[in-house]
Image 1 (cartoon, rainbow, N blue to C red):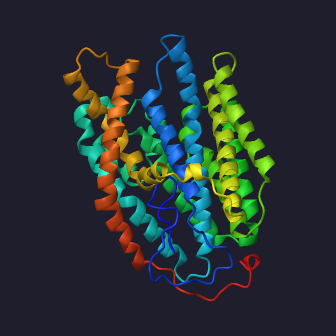
Image 2: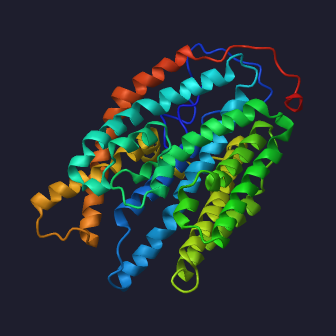
Length: 404
């Protein structure tokens, strides 16, 4: 069995490859769970709303709308927690395979690279024709994108990129995939909860240290080490499900989730009074990580009990989840192209205004939805079909999870 994709979308949470051999993993296998695809789709919708409707306050109503939209930034922490959960379940589930990590990285490449290469070609050679030279990717900066290091480029450049800076999260995720696979390759399984706790503590300590040192919040938000708490919390949930261990009870789960949402909402309300931008970034990312992990913990426990969350399984959310990676990659680079077309077709619509931003975003997203279907059908699916060449082969089984 192989995962069809992680945080930014995939055909399904779990893809079954015909004829794939069973392996002797001592851990519970990862099964397809439609509600987790629903979580991915909800997080994607939150991000699209942020990109389309983050208005400039020009009155009481737009000020309220901006504050409400600002609360949705924690969608990235939901993505990261989901990634941590899935990657951990995949790797634990393939324990006992003779080519565990070779197959993992090969399948990750088949899932992520084809659509990403198409996006890179678009942002390298098309987008620069519709933005200013200061907003475009320079030839010398392209290696950062090829090597999935663009989050550090964005954090250190003293200029604004246009249509490409959303790719910071793709870089953070790829860096996590590599680091976490290496951690799991070399660490004893019995120490896994301690390792997760260490990653969470380190990320929180780095955030608080950056806050005390007055380091710009963009380093906290875009930096890989300071985003490890969400991944590690999701991984901890994955560890417990793999070992069939109980998580939080229903009451505790919802209490944690509501508390995290309250922290996010309240810090947005107090931001204009006594909270600094850096404090807001720290509180939002920590609370968002806790919310994402608690939500996944609740859904996965309910699934094991036969409890379904049908509102997350509706066909529209499942369609979005299947194409979410392509939608995420391509929608933002379309913004400057749509803006250029709007300047020709609607010259009286003030560029930079709230209505212009909303129309620009909605049109770009609509085009991205159409293109995502094409990318999914003609690029992603053919690439994913090659996963059959990277099946997990049977190897001597371990005596127990603790033996690892």
